[in-house]
Image (cartoon, rainbow over all chains, first blue to last red; front, side):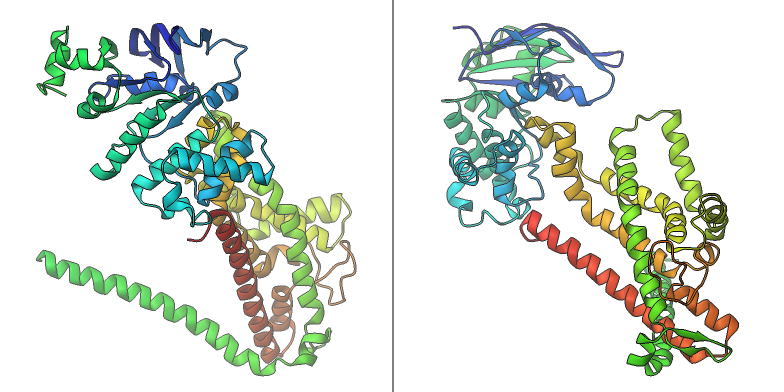
Length: 251
Length: 280
């Protein structure tokens, strides 16, 4: 089966500064692919180029191709709105809107033109259930999303991303602001979600990558050093630098 | 001086500063209310000023003039003011032109209102033949207040966390959808504060209205009628008559109107926030 996402010889620049060097990798459908590496290694930049969130930063440029189902996402005819509908994103800090729980989830569908109240109710319930938070908030749909705990907020954000039925979900260190119990819940959720979605996650937490991901890539100073099945990469790293990093010698 | 004494001394200064400010403010308001309220009765509120050295009559036309001017000015002001603020915060590139515009806005915000009055007199009253009228006064106030509203709007929009925008864009919302559905609702309390500030200025302004609205004590019937606001009436009472008690009463009514306008705007904005955000 062809991979969901293919990255071919990607160079990425912030103004003149090269932050990703000749990265080639792929993400398989309905698998979790994690990207690990020390701060500033370019893994978040790579993640954010998969739904073109870097477009909003001035003065960036890239060479190389990023293919989603075989089609170049940076091609001039690609509508970025359409792309982001297919490739959803969850951020490092839980960032619910200052709106009700219901309105947080209904935001995406509304933006895409869903107006029917019954249909919105349906989407909200389905998304909250899929993000394993329905039971906790079903009586508080009219409460502010900001009134939830940090872990609940992050699951709310995942539900919000699910509401537009993306194919891929990008997660940028989704647990780094959460306590261990909430982290565990999100990890369980991710494993559950991969039945239906392709998940790409950036994480600082190597144990997390080892626990949940099927494939792991290791980045250092803008280069992808190694990419392998997770069990393989953590048990038999091929590169000395990978080994040093996963055994905690630096980073 | 030890850290502890230092802290104590600082505390005394800060508390003292706060106490003095609050005392002065409350003092002024109480003084005006105590002097003015006993003079106020239905007749005072419902009869027009009669003029004369003794300041006969009431303030009915001045109340109508004030509310009329307030409504018209805000109606003209709000869309371009908030629009320009959105433009500066969201769309304007950071280049020389934008910096020049921003600088101009800042300078304009500091120009004395009588200078705007002269400008309004030359443009609206004379060149455009609006004469001394509510319209001339309102347009002049719009020029005076645009910088304030633009600045407060721009600043409240800039204060909206980037994470809200990112979340919205990542969901496939366009930039415009993001501004309308996420950024503006989040910035609304700040923008409302700007509008309240402007409303206060409209009610309190005298100098620039003196030369654009005339000071007719008649009832304004159209946009092109001349008229006077309460502040202007107060000025006439103090400078042309001996009716100091009526000046105080006018001041008291003015204060009450400002309090009502503030409370109303706050209440509206609060209601909107609760509806949008689902409680606190």
